[in-house]
Image 1 (cartoon, one colour):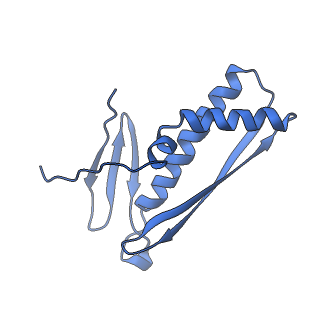
Image 2: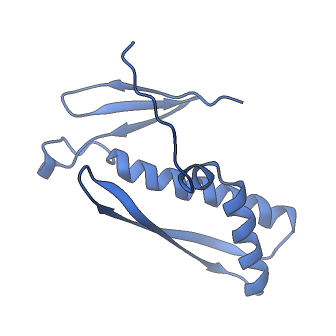
Length: 131
């Protein structure tokens, strides 16, 4: 299975990402020379991780008919090094539920099913080419 998205420049600092029929702008904050028209790529990376994890968490809860609602995931990434990279990423899940043990099981299931989490756990072979 292949997943394809595209990113196109829309201004001096802004790009538009396209995934299926969904669009997101990406930009730098004004303090870093951007127009602040959207999240930075690193923020989108963390959002992608959180969104992937959350969709798997909700699917696992639904499949088990778990009475848990209002899930949130707070994600913090620590940037270090030169060039900068995320050295640690912490995710804290919260919500309304009755059975803590059951939710912890769902979190393991969600982590195992999350494409982004599975990708960042190990090294990634990255190829950057000019068309």
